[in-house]
Image (tube, rainbow, N blue to C red; front, top):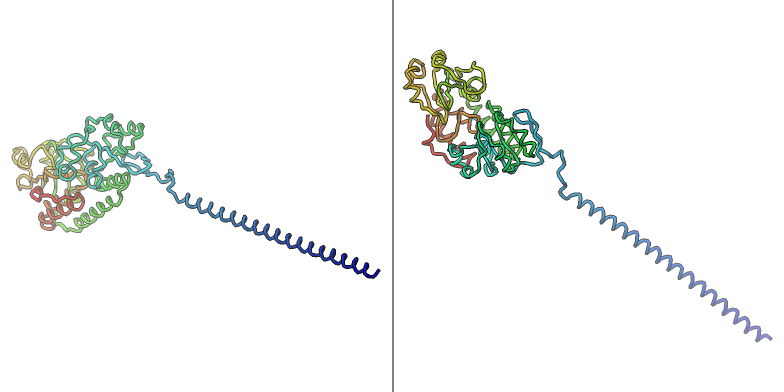
Length: 378
C-alpha cells in the first residue's frame, strides 16, 4: 500500500510540474507577442513620421519652384498722355514711331530690341554710327502718315509714339499691343520719357546712369556766373522765319545754357511763323540755326532784310553741328545741345575745347563709339 501511494504522489507531482512549465511558456509567448506588437506599432509610427516628414519636405521643395507671376508683379505706368499702361513683363520687341524715341532706345542700350521704326531712318547719321542694323528694319510711316497696320503686323511688345499720334494708341491697345505715348517738351519731360521707356523694358539702371550724367552737367552749367544773358533767336528746321515759342523744348534749352529766348512770350508748343518785322523788333543778339536745317547761317547773314539785326551785324549767327544728332531736340543727347550753346554764349567760362572733350566722353560712355571731333563744329 505504501508503494502504491508513493507512485500516485510521483504522478501527481509530474502533472503539477508540467502545468507549471506550460503556464510559464504561455507567459513568455504572450510577452514576446506583446513585445513584437509594440515593436511593430513603433515601426509603423516611425514610418508614418518619416512619410509625413518626406511629404512635408517634398511640399517645401515644390513651394520653392518658380511660381506664375501674379498681377501684383505687373509693370504699371502712366505715360505722358495720362494713359495707364499695364504690362505683364518687360518689353523684348519695340516699334518706335518717332526719331526721338528711337534715339532713346539707342541711349538706353535697347536698339537690338527695335523691330520697326519711323521713315527716313537713313537721314539720321547717328543710326549709322551707333546702331546700323536699324537701317535694315521696316518703317511704320511718319508723323504725317503713320501706318498703324504696318506697326500692328510686326506684333511688338511695345509701341513708342509721340503725343501727335496718340489717336492711334487705342487701336493698337485693342489689338493687345502695349503703347507708350511720350511728350518731351522740356528737359524734365525728356528725362521722364527716358524713365518710362527704361521701366517698360527693364533697364532702369541704364536710365539712372543717364540721369546722373544730366544732373552733373546741369549743375556744372548752373554754377557758372555770366556777365550778361544774351537774347537768343532760334529758327526752325525748315525756315528761319519760324521760331520756338516758350512752350517748346528749344526754349528750355536756351534758358539752361544761360540765354533768354526772344520768342519766350509767343504762345504754342510748336514752331511758330514770324515776319521779318517781328524779328527786327525782337532784335536778337545771337541767332541759332538748328541741326538738320534746310538753310545755313550764311543764308541768314546774306538776307538783306535782316541786315539791321544785332546778331547779323555782329557776326553772331551760329549753326549747330549737322552730322551727328539733333542736339536742339528733346533727345537723350540734348544735354550736349545745352553744353554747345553754353560754349557759344559763354566761351569765357566754358570753352569750345572743353565742350568737344565732353562730347567725346558722352558718346564713348553711352553709345560705345568714339566720335570724330571734326564733326563737332560751331
